Length: 257
Ligand code: ADP
Ligand code: MG
Image (tube, rainbow, N blue to C red):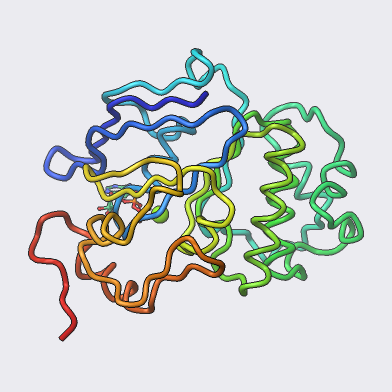
């Protein structure tokens, strides 16, 4: 299992980004992370991946430090240099370690083998995410960590990508940690949910998530939130809240004017 205990991280002394965050997920479960902008979601992923140094707390996978675990990380809004005419196949060769799986096998796994000789810049948003995923799969990760992979995709594209992650989780026993703004997608596909706003967090099986918990984490009210039914949604209101209430305890929850 993946176990985080009492994690804290501060970029500077005055501004802790994470305080005392703990959670566990079983091997080959999917953890969905939601929370307002600036709530520390990307920071948490970078700590897991080792891109930020551990300050306090512990992280382990199956009782070993994460440094001994095969991880793959797909960062937020991956920037690709589109001026370079890079083919999908070239892109999949850009991996830090020796690949344990072939390029074709990984492209096939994510359903874009027919795009192998296309230019990266010609891919649609969904295909591009699949190419990133295919590259991540080349090293057979035990844990796959994705930061807002569905951003910019339409509803169907989001659903397809999440379904693909789900199939990796079940068929290859990959443990998945995914940050996603779309609560509906998280509730549909993740096993556990981590709601995160700096020190404030809630973590449990998704069945236990309530409207109150979400409002508490976002520090605002959601009028039209629907949970635990097909097509659970946030109302549009939450975009507004993210700007006004990303900082903890800096005022009352937003009331509808
Ligand atoms: P989220 O992904 O939930 O939007 P982040 O983890 O990106 O949140 O950011 C958490 C907090 O840490 C924010 O207040 C952000 O401004 C701050 N932060 C993020 N990256 C850096 C950095 N490299 N240096 C200083 N502060 C940062
Ligand atoms: Mg982020």
